[in-house]
Length: 100
Image 1 (cartoon, rainbow, N blue to C red):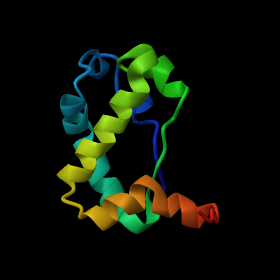
Image 2 (spheres, rainbow, N blue to C red):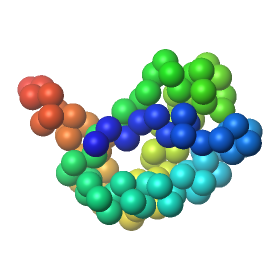
Image 3 (cartoon, helix red, strand yellow):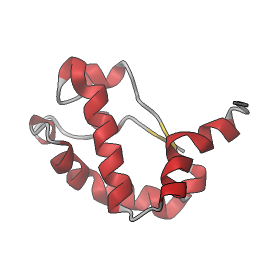
């Protein structure tokens, strides 16, 4: 499951606040279900760039806001470092058979 596109799912009213903390809190019920359904070993980070810059709360700077929202969400899920690394890169390496 690619964890991306969250800004596209929020109403315009919710996107007025650009604080990553507030956005992560607003998205938590949805993300709780994602983590319950898929677990960290089946979730990968996705930037949703350049779409996030069109629909995101900080226009051309929305990519970095999304990265921060995901980072906060991973902390909210109380994931350990290995689980976080799984989401940031390891799941994608496995899914796309990338050898580093």
